[in-house]
Length: 447
Image 1: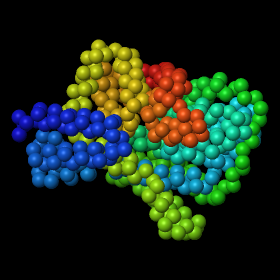
Image 2 (image 1 turned 30 degrees about the vertical axis):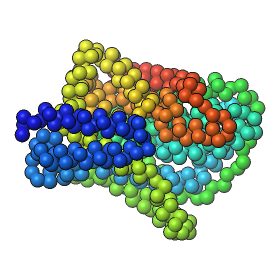
Image 3 (image 1 turned 30 degrees about the horizontal axis):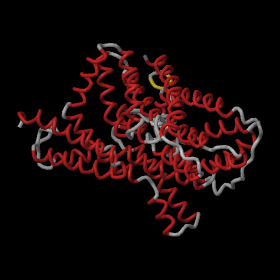
Image 4 (image 1 turned 180 degrees about the vertical axis):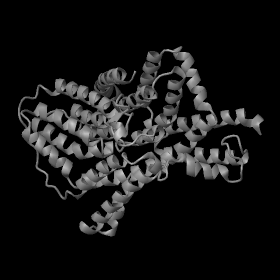
């Protein structure tokens, strides 16, 4: 069987490449392609034992895929956090905060920048598309009062929501995937090895983004008002704070204990999500249909998508393909850690401008770790480069992130359609500015 191992390795690579190509071309069917690819790999591991996976007992490929390759802790964290995020938006607390910002701002230009900054902050804890949808009415109301083209404001909402996606463990699937691979706790996103971690690196990018948009909107000197929102309940806010502080406290639990409780973070988030749903159903007196609609409205597609990706990428790793790619990159960089850093940032930005960054990060984090080990540099230096490039790269094009597509749809409905070139002029410049600043801060701290 060992003679078949090199052939199986390339067969696995072929399945993965075909899967990625189909996902890129037919994004609306991406779950089908990742699921079929995962199924083919499990069948391959079952029919030719000991080649795709190390075990060769009957049923090992299936068992190993669903117990070792799929990260159930990440999936539980995602389900719990997106449930609480949906309830947080329902509570109208974000809209109320935006009202207060507008009222307290000295001018419309400053208010716009502060709303964009708030959009970024909310997206640390709430899914990006949902953040754009809850902030869009506020942005449009201001633009209507000022008779202002809403294009720049709406693009700003999208790119600022994308920017903070990987700042904390609960921000977006990429940060959860990173935490799983690197063994990071909630607190490690703030400080790790005595140094400022990815949270502060992304805040440097956010500060640059705020300055960028202030230059654009500073000409609006007058003061604007928006229709006031009433808060429905503060319970979802309490649950969100409980999620954040609970994960922070779990970070302090000794590894000897958490190693025996691998799903503790995920179960905690999941239980909070269930509590939120029960509150919505009974305390808010919502009917069965409304509660079911809330649950159905959660991003289950991403959950299914991640399951397939975890299996495919796990197989790629176990066949040794990722190690081979890391060796290739080491040869390309010729041992230069600076060149490796620039290469990882640039490739991540370009690819994430067109491709979903979730599968890219799952593939590239192990590559970055292997490349760092080969070149003898701190693994965080290269893994953070992947995070920064892939997170900010989603702002490059109108198709780089779901939030971008939603923003384009809203702009079109308002009668201001934006084309690829128009987005690239604003979003592309924003991407270059924020990526450059975040990369410099990353280099200074972790090189």
